[in-house]
Length: 311
Image (tube, rainbow, N blue to C red):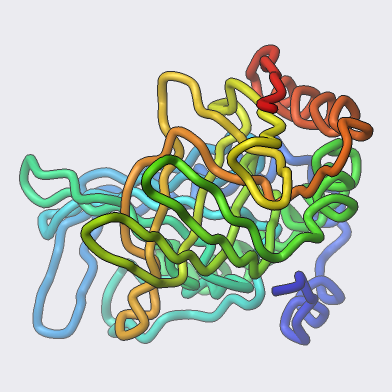
């Protein structure tokens, strides 16, 4: 799961005007906020149904775009990082509908979506598609929004090169298989890939859990916001090989399980401790990695982290 630049991205970036190329991050966000806001009070047509847009807003934190959309049909909160965009296309919406949709395809299941129906807020899900609702009656909107999103992609990519955890992930997440014991239960993790995106670590892995009652297998996604990491643990006692574990603070990490039929990761459980898939036979290198995590956490608005060794 490597980040690659699609042909569409190259074409769009190549066609950017000097004005768009010169836009700062704040200018890009302000533009997108205005585009999200201008559909409030307009009608969106989906098939035979018509919905009145009641709320539409956009914000950004640590490189992660948050979209809030509410209509007479329900409410949706979605998040994605422009860095992970693979392609952007106009969705298949009735041309007579004032409100249209941009279909934003990600490089993997990295777009978070959470629905609210009535007073019930459903558990979040991760898929490979995000949606941006816009005023399609303005013929320039679709192209302009695409260009600004891709400009943001450029800006965040440059910022990520300066993020300490990015180099650490490339250097340290090399071990593919870990076994961890939480007596009497045990878990075997098989890493697929680890990515830093939008102020959070995202680990895609296979997992086998063995308890006295059953053995379960599946493919999973663990999402670890940097600001929620409270402690780094080098476990030489319960992990094979000896490995680095991340412990959450008051807010536990979220783990999602792949639903192959739906092609999305749905909520599985909350976890206090997760492996970072970093093998250590000695304590050399632990301090550097700990500092990389702490420095990145501070960049994301968090504070110091604790550390300990379990022997």
